[in-house]
Image 1 (cartoon, rainbow, N blue to C red):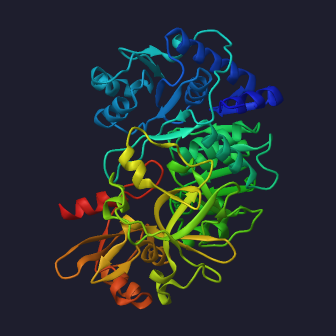
Image 2: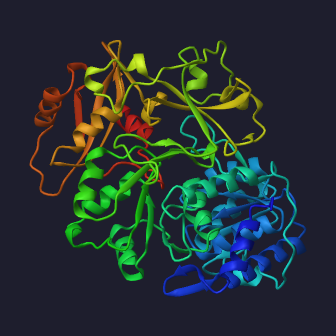
Length: 539
């Protein structure tokens, strides 16, 4: 059962007639899905694509993504998922670096592939959703066949996603069959009764991202549940799908839950069929969580992870209990620590490729119970970098030995991955992420963690969305600036918000500048692109 796709094969044997994918009123059974993956695998094999060859998927959440993903694994290849928002310049690096031989792309995106094709190893382009010049339409590409599942080793690469590139060129993350299988199993075991054959999962998290791929798609399909993909996020459409199909599971990023509660008809939404809501990707503001749970029945359980960890490392499981403000306990099979990594080099903290010159790897003692009162606690005394080890941790960055040396530390007989996130833990085993190291603002010698300021801003009734970033300041080095999306019909001034923050925060933490914006720049997975806010401010 080494090849990841064998988990789907087992589900097909047990739940063959069950719905595997529900999309726009059409249901695909497990047996039908398996036949389609066989047709895709046969098409690859007939074109000489097999073991270790890369197949790039340049698609939104559509059934062909599911087919091509598992069909590639069935043929022995490795999947390179690509953000469908990327343009030619961005995919050019991913295709060239991964040496992908095949690209499956939305028909409208094929021209971007064509633009860079001559600079890559791409031999075949497949279009989804229509014909496109220089591509073979998806249904025409498929070839009838029921090939055996290719035999793969535990440490063979199954998927090679790329980092977002916010700190440099995107890096290829080599995730093995064991990495992904262990994490999909962990994700399904973190909720009562696991993921059941009668579960219906909302598939709005993008499949090119590891959260949507592992926690939503694979964990559902490996357990006989039904996966309902949505190509793009729309709060009204997502809630309508939940209500119409009586979906039982939802995973999202904080921005999605915030969008839901800010809809004009939010009080009329019916979430009664949903038995679990999960959130990850970034920390959810406590106020957003509180408002959602006041309006609807399901509880939101926060988790934490990274692309490099397949992704889940921590989760507030209903089984283990929830602690608001925490990302939860370490999931079974994974180990995590909070270490004093103050000596790590600035290149390493920013995701650079240079190894740290002097590694200080000592554990930071847990607090008695979290979350702590950050306003009255010296966070420098209780925080450190979160490091993790386990079967879910990536094999390494693709052909980047310097980055790999910087990313890992061998200690106590384990290979620990440095997350780059600052946090603390308590004696009950709950972990708390304060912020990314690269997001921390140093103003006048004081450390300011943007999330603390953002949490306060979300509590103000006039604030629909908020992000805090550091901007250059001649006297202080950096100063705190808040970017605010006001609620509809809000009547608030920048000075009033500054005074509100001054009343509730230490003077050095309050935003000295406030800018009102229509929306915040976000990635497809909902993370605020703070580098864009800083760049726009400097311009």
